[in-house]
Image 1 (cartoon, rainbow, N blue to C red):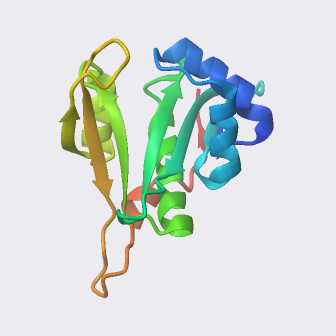
Image 2: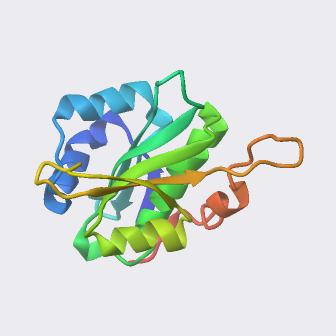
Image 3: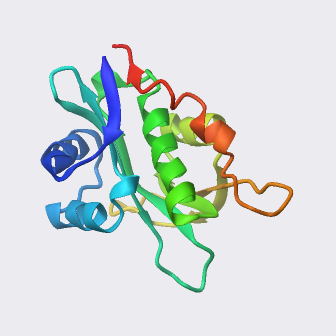
Length: 178
């Protein structure tokens, strides 16, 4: 069984290790610390029954005051052995819910490689992100990225409800069967 929970400082080394196993974009430890110290509500991990981190989401709030408040998914990774179980979806929904409820974000953005079809499917079909732009040569190897956004909904009074129904759907069940 896998448990989805908020990340702590004790998880950062395992999060970095998961990143190194899964993704070509890697970060120094100080970058993980920066996220955890600045936006602890937005970092979530998937932990197996042995205490091993098998997935994580690293997210932040953008600090550009000329833009409406919005979050950004810095990195999402799930070990290959644990994919296709809904873990990435759960991690994303937890982080997005905190963006809206804690920080009053109006939307969330992310970048994804144009060649990453599995991630693109997750973002567009499951999580309802839309392409905002294409950033040419975004990645270190020169590959283009889709700049994607998921806009949180507004109710009749104009208050953001973050598609809370869609975000919270499935969150009540925080354990994922192996």
